[in-house]
Image 1 (cartoon, rainbow, N blue to C red):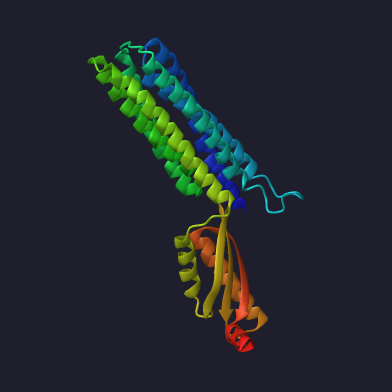
Image 2 (image 1 turned 180 degrees about the horizontal axis):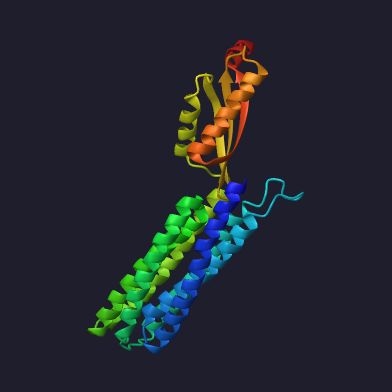
Length: 299
């Protein structure tokens, strides 16, 4: 458990850095977006504002997740992280639709004002900063094995690409393709909406105890490497926040002693933790002739 707490604290560091950088970028882009008359830069600024809220929500979720178990939460508070991600998805969708509505309204009213070329420089600098942030958070996410911070890093990369494309749109508008700046504002809003939908689906998948089959296959292969295990009768897993919980039923020699069966469960727990970072494994031991006995009883 102390190791898991340290990992959460490591992920918190990435969230704090993201909050600081996004606040600076969001304020800069919103202010200069109005001043430079750039719809796409303004939309990108509002996108970064949602990232501030998202990072703050994730940080709160991470801090809550590492709270110790209590009488109301005997398994701990680890699910606070995906709950925070779910709240973030709603915020992103709200802002995305607001930016989309505003961008389309500007296009329909025929508001045609060429943006200042300096807005392109702001977007280029933003793209470089956000790509560096993506690399930093991705490295931390791998060390902390944090799904929440990994999602933040993906958002950093998407924001970096958005800023890069925004700069191209502004440059194009400065050459007379003013419509390109308006179109890019719409595209940015759609990116916000898509990211919100992706975060929503991932959060719901985790909160509903969804788990990918390929990981279960890896766990089963690892367990079957033990010579004492005759077969794996069943294996299930779920995510509890950023932590993996596995429930497995193994078949062993029916003449095995209780102590020997216990030793096997210890080996399985250790192997899954060290090689697959499974936080908790619940192993149920059954004699290997149980299926034969069951089939005879059915005849």
